[in-house]
Image (tube, rainbow, N blue to C red; front, top):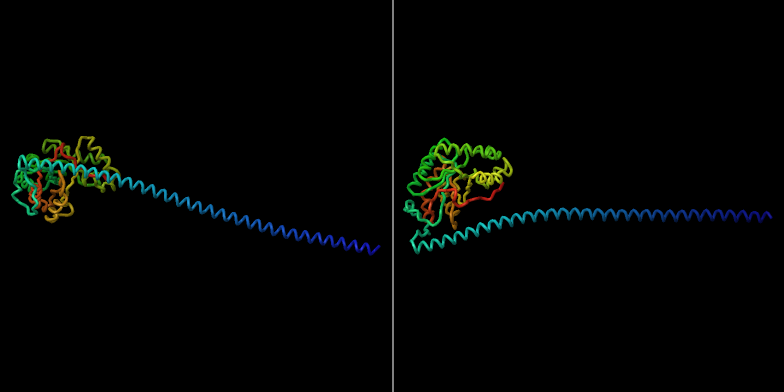
Amino acid sequence: MSVNKNIFKNKTFLIVVSFLLVMVLAAGIFGMEYSSAVSEAEDKINSLNSQNNALISENNALSSKNAENESKIANHKKELDDLNSKIKDLESEVSHIKLTKAQLNSSKKNQGSVTPSTNEKIDMSLLTAPNEGYKVCYLTFDDGPSDNTLKILDILKKANAKASFFVVGTSKLDYIKRAHAEGHTIALHANNHDYGKIYKSEAAYFDDLTKLSNKVKNLIGVESKIIRFPGGSSNTTSKSHNKGIMTRLTKQVQQKGFVYVDWNVDSNDATGNNVPKSKILNSIKSSSKGRGDICVLMHDTAAKKTTVEALPEMICYLRGQGYRFEPLTMDSAVFHHGVNN
């Protein structure tokens, strides 16, 4: 009987031990499976985060590229508008050239008008030749008058040529009385040629213009309505003083009854004091080539002696190209630059 009890005890012990071993083994297996599941889940999370980051980067890249494309489209549109504007100007100029050519041919048949000279040597007899040209040249002088203005008036009188003077409020302003009496146009430039002051505001600009207008009217008895902006309507210097002021002023002056005039031929005498005469003449020749009516920019300040020296040969050359010299009027051809501010 005792033997059977021991056997029972041993069996019970073995069962307990076996049970414990099974539990331990199961726990180990469960732990391994849990660790594996956790690790697998973490790998999936990392993979998803990586995919998410990649999508974010791709989205940012696409957004940046889209913004860049929109900017390029806007730039291309502006370039296209500029090109279309230039094409229209060129088409207009070509039409004008064709018209003047037809007029020249007709004039040659019926009246025997002046044939444009192809000889580079200037014929000084053209200085006093009759004004029989088939195209119009508007000689314009800015920033005067000065003592050089009187010399210019002597040359113009001898050449039977008319010009326009865009004056400033100088101490020599009374010289405009002679210019006006001899049939030249007195136009307005600025009373005070100081960009910082006149382009400070629209009010400042018109205050300056009114002062000059009153001075001119008191001297010649006529109110001038023809103006030229200092630096031209295309100047960008005004931008540093008042952004967008030229866009506004070009509209406002016309609303107030003024006509503003730029130029399409530049003598380049403003590139320095007493620019070599040869440079002035070459600039006139190159920038007037192939044009119809022209408006020539020059200056008659005291420091522009070479402009005076170049003027007789300039008149001879342009007259040889078939130009006649007229003063600007309110009904003259429009010479406008593109506004850049």
